[in-house]
Length: 587
Image (tube, rainbow, N blue to C red):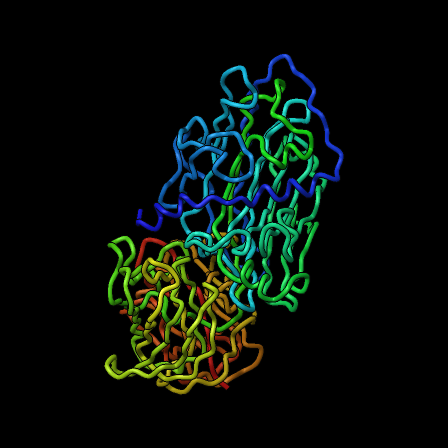
């Protein structure tokens, strides 16, 4: 854990206090005393797999909580936010711990946060759990959409024995981790409930507190919405941050049905951008007491049961990004001026994994450089910074790695997700960071670059995207042939684990073929042919190799056909053939 990670654990948010104030105008429900205020464990529900992404989205990250029974968190992925509830500024009375009494895997595919009580005073002696993701790079690119979703069973309580319980699934803006002030840095509450009520609340916190454009400390919220059966079964709770529409939107969903939305024109542009147009980290917690339960007449009181739990089946982040084509930087050799430690090497910024990052030492300037392997006509770049972003940087390009030209300059970067058009020809691309937004180093989750090769038989038009694709087999229904021609580098086709296998696309008419681009997953073809056909039956080879190296390949070819096929005859691994993208160019 870096110094910054240690410091970040000390950040406390007063955010969830606010929703409770909204409830003051609603009717509270009093708890009814029970003779045995202890939860009796119910039969364990069977877990469900993380769902495939919605149409048009790709899965950016997920956790299915498959740890062994009674084990704690994977601290490479999650961090415990342990400490007294009074530190959170919400009036909570529990102490959150790292103990497997309070936070654990149940061995059946669920994460459990359990609230336990000891002693005779219902307003003291509570322990519980609060956890958050280590990664804070979950957000929507400009022109894109991010969906954060989890399957959750709320504590199996009622208004008779749930007074004071406050379960939540929410996220905070990444800038909070480097000292930006709540609520300006943004908070999106995806699920909150209180006092065992069969309901939920969704809220955005933004602006300043108290008051301001977002009416803090209330925030802009849905109010109480019905959530029948949410205490006794698993339901999906989701939010979408949509930057592809104007005005931008946030939408809240219960079991796939939208129940609330906000638009960027409901507040001023600066408030919205500071609160929404950046990355987030995800939080689950089970609080006891506080202003929100109290606003509904909650306790806890003598009837409040010990042992209530927030059970999480899975959590997933899905993204829909603008279609810039294939990320030509992914997997390419990447170097840097420095690294904070061996945990944060330069290669993390081009590995396609939004939860790994490059982090420099704590000084200016710093640089990160990728070798694309050949010259490309570059047309776009996206950068996903960690909270410790560069406040000033240039994108520089070079054909020889020695002489550099500046293709883009950002002198005051307020957001950690950057997207910019480029117009340059280069083999090497460098991010030269000259100013830091924090006292820590420059930290980059992902650098993605887009463009076309400058050599190799011409470019032509992209003919294959969105066309009908078929294959000899698919590993399963999540890895179909269509994934390889959808223009999305986060989806892929994967075959059965045998030789030979093929993938073909029907261009709809006969075309002259000038280039084929292949973006292989780690399971690539060592030997394969590119073949064309006019009828889908008789095939001609236009390219053949027995020494394929995988990665991103751009193959100059010359041929014609309505159908184009990649025919794999020898695998490089024990797995099947797997392509992120299969692109056919021509005229």
